[in-house]
Length: 264
Image (cartoon, rainbow, N blue to C red):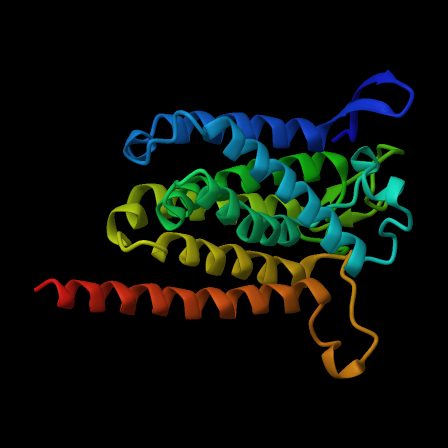
């Protein structure tokens, strides 16, 4: 478990978390390109720009939510864009992509919901691989525990406390997200065929994963108001995304039923 893998020059290094994200991105880009929907949606001419916008909006959203919710977030514009220093929210990444990518898809005249449904199949795989990077770096670490599968960090650059047995919450997330990916890839992509259903179901599952695992995380932050203090800030964000996604799922399902009746 090592945060910095290779030091390049000055502040620039190859970090385990960044490498995991790069591997995950490369894998899902390849999988999407080889999916039957890729050619049906005519993504060949626009896929590079779509991937670029998705990465940029995800990075910005992830950094923004982390800055707003964590006490050690960026305090200057330069700090905000210093991604090598760490500090990133997966929920913020999801929100950033959800808000920005549809605008670019419309500009490219790509059907928004079918593409988001395609992305939803593989997004949990990217998240699961990324959490392995978190595990190596020691970020998103868990509470102290005496369970047999507890882990101890010894790397001085680790973000986790050293010499203490803690929950491997990053691996909890990885296991759950890989199960979600298997469910979507093997089952749900064939069952939830109405536009928007897969993506809204993914938002529900991803939010539920974060909400659940957060109970074992030691890096939680809370609102100052004690009325909201029984959940962390990220758990409230997850609940908000989950509620919106459930409403969206019902809307997409009902709209599809209405359209099918109109053409009977």
